[in-house]
Image (cartoon, rainbow, N blue to C red; front, side, top):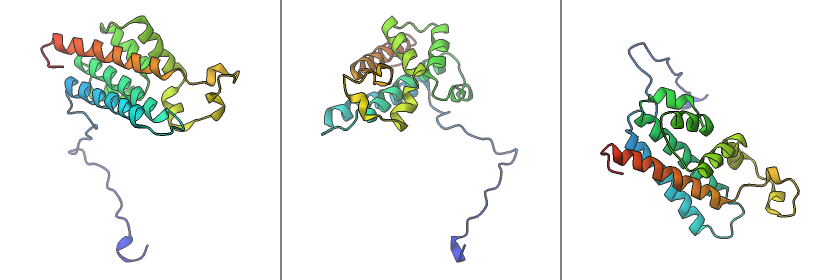
Length: 173
């Protein structure tokens, strides 16, 4: 590369430098507030989107809110940031771990969160879109997106459940 445009090679971290995970300093309440922000952003996108080609941007925000609320609950119950990171975007594994630690959700919310994970919705809304899925007459029902109002309800149910647990600890939520 000519002159000053040459990149300086990165040096590997020394043993005295520890790798800090993004978000590792957030409290469970901070993670909960982040989830509220994603939920609010999803609602804003739905409210202000003009001539939508797709509801995928709102779906992505709502799916990330689900993930973030589950992380808040798990963090509140002692799951370390490195363990949370290991879940990646697997909301079904997070849901199983959270319910094992006492999270109580409406059965419809559990079913919906599990289905979004099973179907790979988090990846699908980011990278895959089939215009045929917009048609109610398209026979491939499995590829048709689930109704967004069910997603919004699942997010709200999870938010309320996590909020109530946080409040019970004395944390303002």
